[in-house]
Image (cartoon, rainbow, N blue to C red; front, side):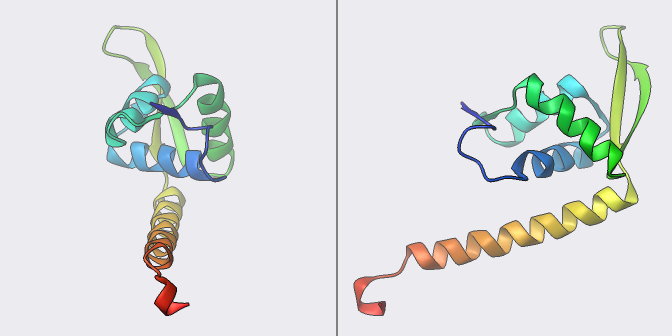
Length: 114
């Protein structure tokens, strides 16, 4: 499993968090688990990176939080996307898809095309 902080471009963690929260309202540890799950167990977000990112996204108005009770009966802060967060997610996904497509084209280049 690759830690998210290792080898990924800046902004990736925020995008992964927005995507995870877009799927359902989650508490912090649930975000970690969801990112691991949606990445096919390839990405592991350290808790020390997650919570500052959640605070940053909330401060930017992209997510909002409310206190609730977790499945094990503990008090937990649950996060959901705001309208601005959904808009930001859509823009970032489109940007990453364009980048991935451009990288795929570039990596398929042959000496004859140069």
